[in-house]
Length: 285
Ligand SMILES: C[S@@+](CC[C@H](N)C(=O)[O-])C[C@H]1O[C@@H](n2cnc3c(N)ncnc32)[C@H](O)[C@@H]1O
Image (cartoon, rainbow, N blue to C red; front, side, top):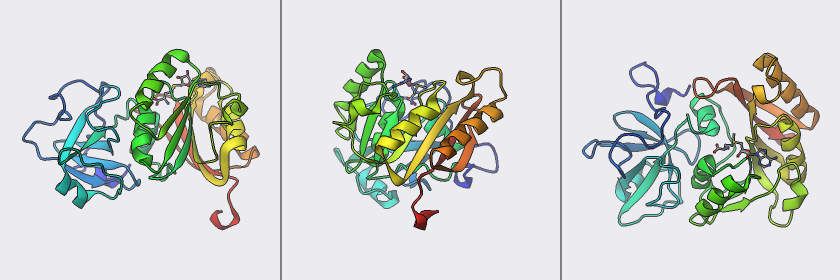
């Protein structure tokens, strides 16, 4: 758990609750109008902490004025934000910029960050292949993080979720939605380039194989990966720890160097996020 999130030695207060949109005044991120919120860079580049009545994980909204899934937004005067930002891709609109609250109960990537993972490799300017995009809840925050110079190839095979994803991407030019089966990576070779990072959250029994074949097609050597493992969709009778270990072993055999593993309680039960580097270059071993 990152120290910067803990106030007064107590429990971190920035989980945001299960519902992204409940409570608070619309457009003010739930913060009371007179509550002063200070934005500080998170130790993960491109991610921020909004310090107010409670500490919230936030990303800089690439499409100011819009919520993607009912998440709270926090407007900040440009002057204040410039002082506190470590990002260059700030887009001032009417002297304000806007941050979107990133709720760890709604996103396994956010949960892994809150639970202390050291690197997610996703940062401003990164090219990311995102497997299991669903309607784009987490994809939209990844889009905020990578900014205008980055790109997110978002793969989702459900047409229904894919429709929401495509609509969301209309306001975010750095997202390329691809409605295809991630088991067939050759199908998107005309649109997807080589990437710096693969994030995978497909919740399938063959999820290790899915990330492996996508890495073989699109992940550069030395690129990062973030792999969300849902134990009970692989084997609901085995101990989750044994399932995680078997998945990690499969990755290792395919040239993935696993560097970190975090579980996602209290945000998700029996889930782990594993991160590391694909075919590390000699200098980065
Ligand atoms: C757990 S949800 C992803 C949630 C999403 N990552 C988020 O945080 O907003 C898993 C998604 O993976 C998609 N999926 C599962 N198998 C897939 C496959 N073979 N190809 C593409 N998408 C797949 C499902 O349709 C579902 O939308």
